[in-house]
Length: 413
Ligand code: C2O
Ligand code: CU
Ligand code: CU
Image 1 (spheres, rainbow, N blue to C red):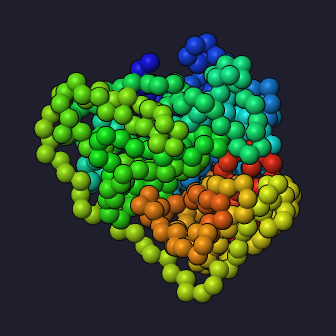
Image 2: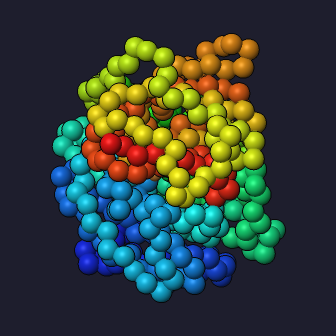
């Protein structure tokens, strides 16, 4: 099938979480009937304001993953939207350009609601990014990659696996094995891993260069052979199609599963002469010279430091404006993609089993909000909460782990 491209959310259109029918007649959930839902596109400095309606038969919330929002606008499990009701969200956009997304976050049912199709893109633009003249229009693809179960009662059948539910069919923008066309030249692929639990390792016959991630542009372009993406992570990648003849087919493939995810037919394109800029963005380097301020060990039975999530327990307090060093260590049950609400962080070198070094991967430079911690790995990050005070969340973005309690509340004050 052709690759669906998400439309933009209309100016006064509420976001409606409800039933959706997907290709092949399967029923699931979707925002405004689609998967992905309509894209929200704003500029740094804009005001975001939107009504969310819950047309489902169960409570939900909408979390704006990657957006720094005040506590009561963050779509946390504490602020459920009851079935049949709605909620108005409004907050200023105060962050650099980047690919963010929105998805449900009700406690205990996030995994099922996300599996059934609730996800959409939330794109922020700014002048720094615009000045680079990156490929846009038809040469810019927004892709949500994930998997689905075909055996369990249709494409969207969901049988929860506490270890992290994986399906045996790849899906891009809600369809399996899609095709699209791109003109010869450069294309910009903005990819979100929207799977519940699957880690993808993306490859292509075309040269790939990472230029950004969760927190927007990185400092310098990073040519890569492969990109590993855990649930919740985003990458901004330039695909070089200059050397392909019109009619040639290029794939975006997942090396881990052996899947062709997306088939791209190269078409004749205008010679633009555009080259990848050598420098992308000036990134502030957070500095912290001491030992970790906090260590989080992600353990068996969905525990962090021995505890299971309690909605009304505050697990720790973080001083507003301070640079802290957090250590994420994984015991069993990994990989754990660790996500933080309320700020972006910078990834430092870590350790791997046997005492080796876990280098910062090319797509982990700059600013991140989710980092993948594999079995027995340790990753340190530097983080500074300097936009809002209030209660935020730290959790594993493997959604079954999150639902079963691998999450903490903390307060910035
Ligand atoms: Cu994308 Cu708290 O999640
Ligand atoms: Cu988030
Ligand atoms: Cu986990």
